[in-house]
Length: 120
Image (tube, rainbow, N blue to C red; front, side, top):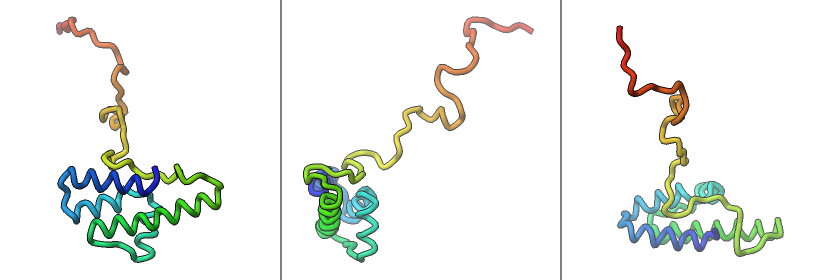
């Protein structure tokens, strides 16, 4: 997803979700491509206001997109910047529902005879 599209979607969702300015800026910085976030800090371009932060991130993202296009011969319609889609979870998705943490998976292990009672 191009950075302009990403920022547009993020801003719309932040307004829809009623996020405070501070919280929205923090989420934006945490969820952009790590290369963009790194440049944001290295170039001391961080902003407190969401609209200003979004503009600085767009500048960096566009520069990276342009660089990749010129270096790799890519197109401007897509890039390979890995960033989360706005609205997606910050957490890594593990669909085992916690069983894997304990080495268990549903359907594994010894079969149980539910109807059988053991007498001592």
